[in-house]
Length: 159
Image 1: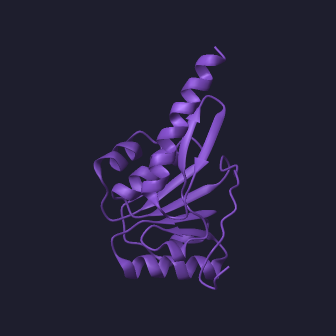
Image 2: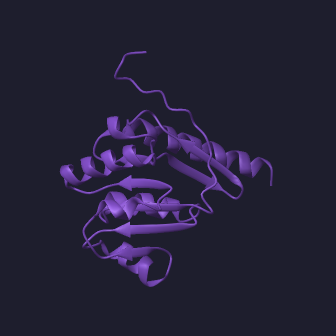
Protein backbone atom coordinates (compact mmCIF):
# COMPACT_ATOMS: atom_id res chain seq x y z
CA UNK A 1 0.00 0.00 0.00
CA UNK A 2 1.36 3.43 -0.97
CA UNK A 3 1.85 6.01 1.78
CA UNK A 4 -0.92 8.25 0.42
CA UNK A 5 -3.32 5.39 -0.32
CA UNK A 6 -6.15 4.75 2.10
CA UNK A 7 -8.02 1.48 2.54
CA UNK A 8 -11.67 1.72 3.55
CA UNK A 9 -13.48 -1.04 5.42
CA UNK A 10 -17.17 -1.36 4.52
CA UNK A 11 -19.29 -1.41 7.65
CA UNK A 12 -22.83 -0.60 8.63
CA UNK A 13 -23.28 1.80 11.54
CA UNK A 14 -26.37 2.46 13.65
CA UNK A 15 -26.95 6.21 13.42
CA UNK A 16 -30.43 6.25 14.97
CA UNK A 17 -29.15 7.78 18.22
CA UNK A 18 -26.41 9.85 16.57
CA UNK A 19 -26.15 13.45 15.49
CA UNK A 20 -24.84 14.07 11.99
CA UNK A 21 -23.69 17.64 11.38
CA UNK A 22 -23.56 18.82 7.78
CA UNK A 23 -21.60 21.95 6.96
CA UNK A 24 -23.00 23.39 3.73
CA UNK A 25 -26.45 23.21 2.18
CA UNK A 26 -26.01 22.96 -1.57
CA UNK A 27 -26.64 20.11 -4.00
CA UNK A 28 -23.97 17.75 -2.67
CA UNK A 29 -25.16 18.24 0.91
CA UNK A 30 -28.76 17.75 -0.26
CA UNK A 31 -27.99 14.39 -1.91
CA UNK A 32 -26.18 13.10 1.15
CA UNK A 33 -28.85 14.35 3.54
CA UNK A 34 -31.60 12.67 1.53
CA UNK A 35 -29.78 9.37 1.91
CA UNK A 36 -29.17 9.94 5.62
CA UNK A 37 -32.81 10.74 6.39
CA UNK A 38 -33.66 7.04 6.65
CA UNK A 39 -30.77 6.31 8.99
CA UNK A 40 -29.70 9.24 11.19
CA UNK A 41 -31.33 10.23 14.45
CA UNK A 42 -30.61 13.95 14.13
CA UNK A 43 -29.33 15.86 11.14
CA UNK A 44 -28.13 19.40 11.74
CA UNK A 45 -27.22 21.62 8.80
CA UNK A 46 -24.97 24.65 9.27
CA UNK A 47 -25.11 27.14 6.39
CA UNK A 48 -26.05 30.80 5.91
CA UNK A 49 -28.24 29.81 2.95
CA UNK A 50 -29.67 26.53 1.68
CA UNK A 51 -31.08 24.97 -1.46
CA UNK A 52 -34.87 24.72 -1.61
CA UNK A 53 -35.01 21.03 -0.70
CA UNK A 54 -33.04 21.56 2.52
CA UNK A 55 -35.30 24.50 3.42
CA UNK A 56 -38.33 22.23 2.86
CA UNK A 57 -36.86 19.45 5.02
CA UNK A 58 -36.21 21.98 7.79
CA UNK A 59 -39.80 23.27 7.60
CA UNK A 60 -41.06 19.66 7.79
CA UNK A 61 -38.95 19.10 10.92
CA UNK A 62 -36.88 16.36 9.30
CA UNK A 63 -33.63 18.23 9.99
CA UNK A 64 -32.42 21.26 11.91
CA UNK A 65 -31.05 24.10 9.77
CA UNK A 66 -28.96 26.69 11.58
CA UNK A 67 -28.96 29.64 9.21
CA UNK A 68 -25.45 30.84 10.00
CA UNK A 69 -21.80 30.60 9.02
CA UNK A 70 -19.79 27.64 10.33
CA UNK A 71 -18.04 27.94 13.67
CA UNK A 72 -15.87 25.26 15.29
CA UNK A 73 -18.33 25.10 18.20
CA UNK A 74 -20.92 23.68 15.78
CA UNK A 75 -18.97 20.42 15.88
CA UNK A 76 -18.74 19.92 19.64
CA UNK A 77 -21.77 17.62 19.96
CA UNK A 78 -21.53 15.99 16.52
CA UNK A 79 -21.00 12.26 16.17
CA UNK A 80 -20.29 12.40 12.44
CA UNK A 81 -19.56 15.37 10.15
CA UNK A 82 -20.03 15.98 6.44
CA UNK A 83 -18.31 19.06 5.05
CA UNK A 84 -19.87 19.98 1.72
CA UNK A 85 -19.29 23.66 1.09
CA UNK A 86 -17.95 25.40 -2.00
CA UNK A 87 -15.33 27.12 0.19
CA UNK A 88 -12.07 25.18 0.42
CA UNK A 89 -10.89 27.13 3.47
CA UNK A 90 -14.06 26.24 5.38
CA UNK A 91 -13.78 22.59 4.31
CA UNK A 92 -10.15 22.49 5.48
CA UNK A 93 -11.05 24.17 8.79
CA UNK A 94 -13.85 21.64 9.37
CA UNK A 95 -11.50 18.76 8.57
CA UNK A 96 -8.77 20.04 10.92
CA UNK A 97 -11.25 20.69 13.74
CA UNK A 98 -12.76 17.22 13.40
CA UNK A 99 -9.32 15.61 13.51
CA UNK A 100 -8.53 17.53 16.74
CA UNK A 101 -11.91 16.62 18.25
CA UNK A 102 -11.76 12.94 17.26
CA UNK A 103 -14.85 13.15 15.04
CA UNK A 104 -15.07 11.16 11.80
CA UNK A 105 -15.40 13.54 8.86
CA UNK A 106 -16.09 13.41 5.14
CA UNK A 107 -14.88 16.37 3.09
CA UNK A 108 -16.79 16.32 -0.19
CA UNK A 109 -14.19 18.38 -2.07
CA UNK A 110 -11.13 16.29 -1.17
CA UNK A 111 -11.21 12.50 -0.95
CA UNK A 112 -7.88 12.48 0.91
CA UNK A 113 -9.59 14.38 3.74
CA UNK A 114 -12.20 11.72 4.38
CA UNK A 115 -12.33 9.26 7.25
CA UNK A 116 -15.17 7.57 5.39
CA UNK A 117 -16.74 7.71 1.97
CA UNK A 118 -20.39 8.32 1.46
CA UNK A 119 -21.64 5.23 -0.39
CA UNK A 120 -24.29 4.94 -3.01
CA UNK A 121 -27.16 3.22 -1.21
CA UNK A 122 -29.51 0.62 -2.63
CA UNK A 123 -32.39 -0.20 -0.34
CA UNK A 124 -35.30 -2.57 -0.80
CA UNK A 125 -37.27 -3.34 2.33
CA UNK A 126 -34.81 -4.64 4.93
CA UNK A 127 -31.98 -5.14 2.43
CA UNK A 128 -29.44 -2.31 2.34
CA UNK A 129 -26.42 -2.35 0.06
CA UNK A 130 -23.72 0.31 0.20
CA UNK A 131 -21.53 0.74 -2.88
CA UNK A 132 -18.26 2.58 -3.23
CA UNK A 133 -15.35 2.55 -5.63
CA UNK A 134 -12.73 4.61 -3.79
CA UNK A 135 -14.04 7.97 -4.93
CA UNK A 136 -14.84 7.03 -8.54
CA UNK A 137 -18.50 8.08 -8.84
CA UNK A 138 -18.90 7.00 -12.49
CA UNK A 139 -17.79 3.47 -11.68
CA UNK A 140 -20.06 3.37 -8.63
CA UNK A 141 -23.00 4.56 -10.73
CA UNK A 142 -22.48 1.75 -13.26
CA UNK A 143 -22.19 -0.92 -10.57
CA UNK A 144 -25.27 0.51 -8.83
CA UNK A 145 -27.34 0.18 -12.03
CA UNK A 146 -26.32 -3.46 -12.38
CA UNK A 147 -27.01 -4.20 -8.71
CA UNK A 148 -30.44 -2.52 -8.95
CA UNK A 149 -31.36 -4.84 -11.84
CA UNK A 150 -30.13 -7.84 -9.88
CA UNK A 151 -32.12 -6.88 -6.77
CA UNK A 152 -35.29 -6.40 -8.81
CA UNK A 153 -34.82 -9.76 -10.55
CA UNK A 154 -34.07 -11.52 -7.26
CA UNK A 155 -37.15 -9.96 -5.68
CA UNK A 156 -39.36 -11.16 -8.53
CA UNK A 157 -38.05 -14.73 -8.13
CA UNK A 158 -38.90 -14.77 -4.41
CA UNK A 159 -42.37 -13.22 -4.60
